[in-house]
Amino acid sequence: MMLKLTSLSWSLTSLPCNAATLDISSPKALIKKQCRFLGSASPRLTTSISRHNAVVSGEEYSSASSSALIVTEAKEKEDGSDGSKKSLGDQLRLGSLTEDGLSYKEKFIVRCYEVGINKTAIVETIAKLLQEVACNHFRILGFSTGGFATTTTVTKSNLTWVIARMHIDIYKYPAWSDVVEIETWYEGRGPIWGGRYWILKDCATSEVIGRATSKWVIMNQHTKRLEKISDDALEEYLAFSRRESRLALPEEQNGSLMKIAKLENPAEYSRQGLMPTRADLDMNQHVNNVTHISWVLEGMPQEIIDTHEIKTITLDYRRECRHDDVVDSLTSSEPFEDTQVSELNGSNGLAAATTKGSEEFRQFLHLLRLSGNGHEISRGRTKWRKKQSKIYPNHSV
Image 1 (tube, rainbow, N blue to C red):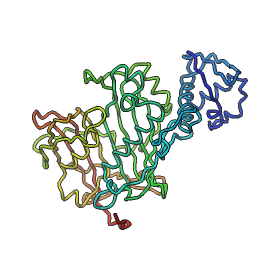
Image 2: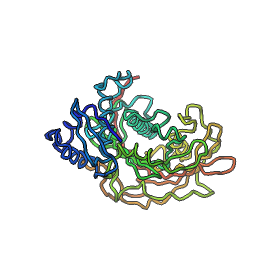
Image 3: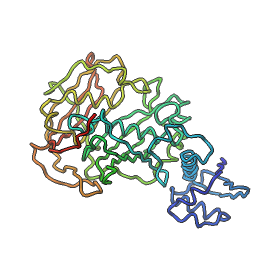
Image 4: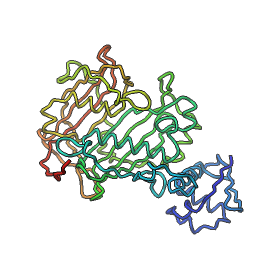
């Protein structure tokens, strides 16, 4: 396979391994430096690198170098140096790849229609922003041509990514007109699934105000069955995936790993006969995963909604939901067994272990099912903390 690197200037000047000091006439040193930054070497690719009229060759060139090519091309497309014309949306979007090209950051202003009665963003707003920044990350890499996060190989195989689990941990809700910066990255987890992760910061203070993790699997759009991703498609994703795992949540306090038991009848609370609207359908023609969050909240008792706010929410998605489905939302309280409660600890936002009373924190199990046959759509767990008395700017509309 021959890879043609038309512009080497960015990849050399921005790598934190002093690659810019390398002599281009020493290909082995150049390759060694790139592989040290991007991953271990592999003898899978024999590559020629052309720079102007000079050609250098390497006997062993890792697939990590193809990652450098993709990142370089994405950077050039992003700043317009490849000659392509950026769309108006791309010009106005407050997002860009990080220096290493393995993460994407974007800033968002919290709009008036994205907040609740407390003038702070609702949990659905947070979930939608996570989805938006993930989509934009794939777009800037040249993916998502045939659907969310799809590459050419995946599209030709009639495959698509579907979410299997979502976990959101919110330390502090942003208020109306606040600016939030969200960083996201993808990690390939082999041929079965991939992980996407997020960190949310308050731009004014640089405090981490939330973290999120998700698990995605490949589904055949025709058979509706899960499939292993092919080696060719996997290589496309691994090109911009981190070689070393980076945790969005501290391992010892990662509630996203907890198993969610199925809620059995009779439930303490229920809301029956929920139906999706046209606005709930996504580009794959099934109900958007954020709507599942809204339906979970519909099954909550009003006294909890009035006095508490969601601290964490975890959802396991078991079945797709169509536009004509009728859904029941079931909820039951669960003992708050975990006394290790995440709170802000200074400006880095790492979770601090504190013990709180049960009157301040509540925990619930949830089940979304089809009204007709009782088939499970998704199951979830929410943890709630008592609302704090806060005063927010009195904006006029």
